[in-house]
Length: 530
Image 1 (cartoon, rainbow, N blue to C red):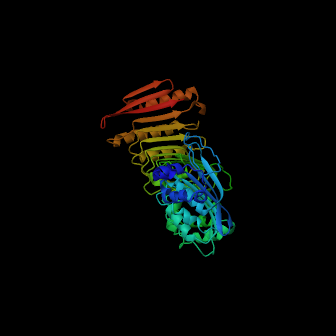
Image 2 (cartoon, rainbow, N blue to C red):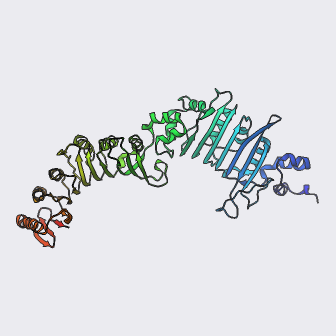
Image 3 (cartoon, helix red, strand yellow):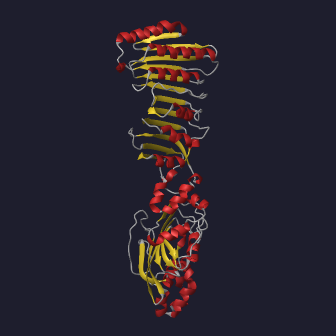
């Protein structure tokens, strides 16, 4: 029985394992086999490839020649990948890579026919002066090909239409790197599609590529709307990184950064790290709702010693509407609140605020900042002093503030803390827990008395939500003697003992209970001398 008498399907199965680099080699051996394979090559075994690399070498008799590498996963061990170069075009399950040098475009067509392109994820093309390459590739790569990464370097190529078709078929990519992309003649250009899923874009505009990049950045070649939409998905946390790759792209993005997609920010912590007269530097901590914000796989990012313009760029990439937690700290900063206030929406949703600033900007700027934070539920003020001494601010009404903590340090004057505390208590209707923590020995009992009197007056005028816990902490290291400590507690007992349902002195603490008949709640007053 002759082998030619076998069914075509079986014969093609056998011929699939031939170590043939090209159909021409089969023709030299057997024209019959050549015809059978040529007519039934679609039935031959196909091999999954995941990476394709094509590099042009030189021309031979007006024919283009390439170095080609096909890479696939290890069939026996998909975790461990290794590169193996073999000299014949035959894929075995335990081989990962096949490389062939100086092949013609017809050979490349044969190889791609033998491969299953449906698993191709990455393609790298580095060519110069080619005519037929992209016509061959476009026969196999379609919009359904799951390509994620493209690395392209094309120069002196007279076929922009084929390249445009190739890029259009791969518009679902996530990573695009253009090292070179120019044509012959130089007036030729292409139009980029909208890359919906693009996350990384690298364009290098040096040497002979610079002129083309400038053409690409023009409005008629790449609309600004598309460019900004692309940039919204990039892994650039600031514009400066774009400038390192493409100045033209940097200019377009800088002018249209307001249109870039913003990422939901829910926690922000920042402050200046130098109190010198030179340009201020800042540390910033950002926490996001989405894991890919600013191009990072984790939700938190920290930036150290950044300048004001970089901080502005970071905040402009963030959606402040979702901001819930805010921490501000700094020393001798004139622009701390000026930087943040323009980025906050008028009806900010910030719930928790912590402030520790010394000799900051004017009270008017801080008041403007607080006016946007009327939804606060928790406020901690450790320090809040201004460049000019004895300046105070008028806080707005915080209808939802339930926890208030004020600390007094050696930076803070007693009158400022007293006025601040009374002002806040007067403008807060739902405080359940108030804590006053003093670290200074110059703090008088009169200030504490004023706070408690204000507290008791608040209890008489409110029907529902009132203080549930009122705490004053006097640290022992501030220099209060045991005698003064006893006198302070005694004075408190004498003045307000009859105003409370229950009054107890336990060591250095006074615990007082106040029952409100209107709302049926018990208020706890704690005075700690630590």
